[in-house]
Amino acid sequence: MLSRRQQHCLQGIGIPLWRERSSASRPEAEETRDIGDRPRFSETEKQGLSPNSLPAVSAPPKETALDGWDAILDSIRTCTACELAQNCTQKVPGIGNRKARLMIIGEGPGHEEDIRGEPFVGRSGQLLDRMLRAIGIEREQVYITNIVKCRPPNNRDPKSEEAQQCRRYLEAQIEQIEPRIILSVGRVSAHNLLGSNQPVGKLIQQMHQLPGTEIPLKVTYHPAYLLRNPSAKAIAWQDLKLVHQLLQ
Ligand code: URA
Image (tube, rainbow, N blue to C red):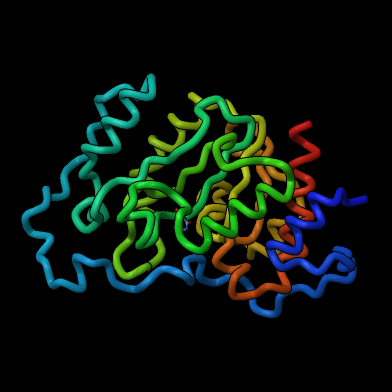
C-alpha cells in the first residue's frame, strides 16, 4: 500500500499508480546506451581547444596506498592513467555520505557532470533524485559515484581498460563506505561490477553480490534509459522498493 507521499513521488517520476510489476510491459529494446541525455560534445570540443596542453597518459600511481579519503581523492585528481584524463574538464570522484548505507554506481560523468564535478546532476541525475525520494531517501544520504571518474569523450562507453584503471578507486571508495547495499545503474555499471555481459533486463531479475565481497548488489535501469523508455519505470520502481526493504 502506497503512502500519499509515495503516490505523489511516483506521479512525479511518471509512473502510473495502477501499474503492477506483473502487468508492466517490459521495454522492447534492451538497454544499449546509458547516457542518452549527454550532449555529444563538451565546451572544449566545441571551441576546438586542443587537449595537448593536458598531462600525457602515464602509468597509474600504483604505489600510492588508497587508505583514506584524502589519499583516494588526491589520487583520483592527479590520475593520468588513461586517455580519459586528457580530455575531461575535471575529475568527478563521487559525492555524498561517506558512511552511506546505500551506494549508487553509474557509468561515467556526462557533459553536465564534467562541468560541475559532481555525478548525476544532469537530467538523469534529476530523475535519480526523484526516484530516491520516492523511497524516502534524499540524495545527501547516499554516496553516488561512477565506474570511471572522467568523462568519456563523445559520450562513448568507457573502454574496459579505462574501467580497469579506475577500479582501484572504486574499490577503495567501497572499502571506506562499507555500504549495506550497492545499486548498480545501467549496463556499463552492472557489466563492470559483476564481470558479466548479460543483458540488464536479465541481471535485474535477481539479487547479486559484489564479487569478492558479501555486499548485496541490485542492478536497475539507468535513469537515462528510463527517460527514453518510460515503460521501464515500473520495473525500476520495484527495484527501488526492494532496495528500500533491504535497507530496513
Ligand atoms: N550517467 C552516469 O552514469 N553517471 C553520471 O554521473 C551521469 C550520467
